[in-house]
Length: 292
Image 1: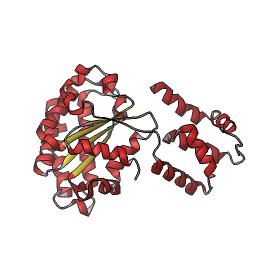
Image 2 (image 1 turned 120 degrees about the horizontal axis):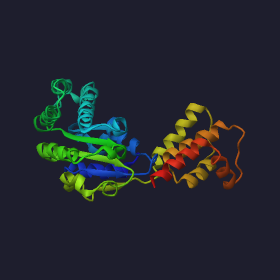
Image 3 (image 1 turned 90 degrees about the vertical axis):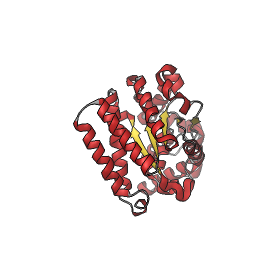
Image 4 (image 1 turned 180 degrees about the vertical axis):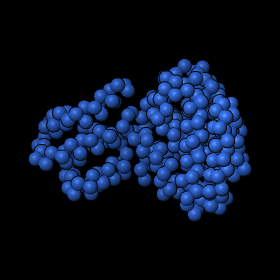
């Protein structure tokens, strides 16, 4: 049930062959939302049913390639595609039409051939061949999940989006990209920079609410399990009002309270005062402030 509404909206765009921007504050759960799509089979089955076998989600954390040129970004995307296929090929239910390990072997072979030459054009041609094989021959819908994409923006050039358009034109409606950002692309870069891909993401924006009740309940129960301590329900209600359910902030606050065994706040003011003394809480608030 976690992030049900947001995932439903993402998949609506994906089914139409469109790309989408997922916008949220730092620590609000963008990475968790993408992780649910790429790693949680039960979430995929809940939203896609048996058709989930026709969709393949590839998560790429762009914070890993800050200050890298286009060649490295292409290699990074290609490598994540290969690794995701290797993971999927491990499971028996992926073996039918998808051909599981066979698809990994084919795409991995193309990847190794492409990087041997160390040429931008050859590498991208290899990625095109891989997308052709998966989307045209295997009839899979490939969905790239570009997490923390805002961290790569200083290194972007127009060719990045031109390449995405080329891949989308080959795969047609079986290719989508989810850009995870702290604010819309239109506010972060000049429109001319992503003009080639604009028609596929124009107005396709999903804003991530701070509160995800199922996710928050799970986080609380998990903390109780690993600490062996019960968290007072009234205290969690007080915290929820202070953080508005912000995932990272709520988790850090709960950890601080559990670590301070002698702390028992009697008022909201006392709770606020205690939390604002915690370095981790202040760091999370500062991260939000900087993004604004």
